[in-house]
Length: 602
Image (tube, rainbow, N blue to C red; front, top):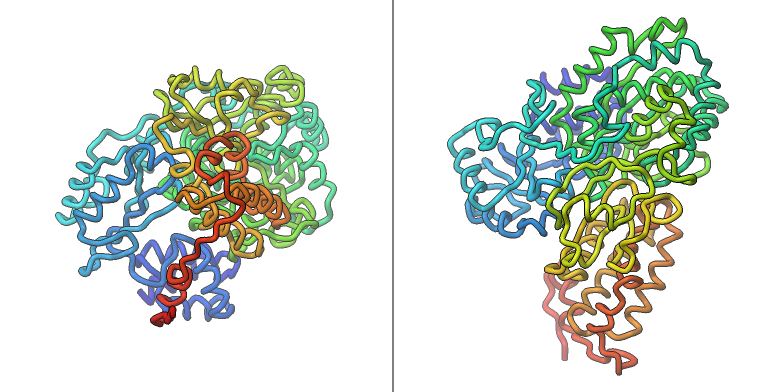
């Protein structure tokens, strides 16, 4: 391993800002990152052991202990449970003889839970040595474990045909399905790679490009909805030695998978959008930050980038534009939802823990390596290509007056046709239910915008998807009446935020945990009216958190109280002002277990 490690470090020129890449490569090669490897990395990069260890400890997919020759990460998202995850988990444990979080004594198999892996339209799903397995059942688990024991490689374990489209590409070879159900301007197949660069950029100034983007009124598709043209203009005017374009492809919001489909089927469109943004702001380098779970697309995406270089759509004097030099590289994460926040994403790309920065300054002033940086969502950059091709005014004819254009949605849960739908802004939730074949009489709720969004009931299904009503980054989860809304859905979402908190803010670190305990108290039938009021008030405190994760982490509970208050009222003792029961032994159990003490209670 010593020579291999040396080669990995040299591959990244001993650059400490490429620490993430080095750790990913070592983890991939060895199945863990040993103490000797940590020391070697620290020495060669001229950073402290603490720097390496604190980055390692932050990310879910890094481990300092062996994770098994075959490492299984089973998605634990809400939709996975809705589709039978519990029985699949039990089958894995039965067939391997170990619990999740453990490795078999012979080091062959490791079982681990993981957050949503971007496969909510084909659950339950798991990653096995980086390859995706979808639509799992207890029977499939038996087959997989037997194949592992027979020494088969990952692709030999597939039992279904490869997915459609580029999932069949020799550099991908995945059973993942695209499930593209509705196509609009972004997903349309009439795109000709390089056309906008050669026909539009060559005759436009950067200022004219920004003007056209501003004319379209397009707003960021990642959730915040900041005007894209304005962001580009700020960056162009900012002072810096170098400027960067970041594509945020770290879609970690449970229920979201549209970017995975775009990366698979429309990567050339995305990369051309980054070139346009680079030209507009005067950037020379683009970085696509991709969630680790999509690592199976790496070789394919690298080949697309090289093809663009070969056709003069990347590199020097792009499209014959003298002096326009711009290239793109891929940067993978390692499992941290908070890295979807733009400043945390930049910190991660610099080889650090993905902790959000204080703002101001904003990334357009001081971003990657303290240089002016634009961070745009996958869908935003794809839309920019179509806007330049057809004109900003054309784009305003789509959607609504305040929410122009289209939105690509990831729809999953209790519906007949889960998948990716591109619609114009202004569609109602009811329209979405009809499109996806959901039984509207059986739908009790829809989670709009993932856990950080809003949980709505049937009375609000006529509300519109747009920035001035129900804004969404793209996830809609349809929830049938067979599920316990508070126990099965809200509790899972709240636990997700607890798991994914970076821990920097005391609000997010502590209050989400306390809110979950309070919710469980209510679910156990020990709650009172004041407990519900406390949950609402505590949710307000979270608004002072540093980033969007903390600020929205109370949403699963708070929006469920707002729209499903009757479910809480049915569980609490309405005739009590306080709950006087107190179990001392239970209260001290956790601390006694941790210290090995036996409590004296009398």
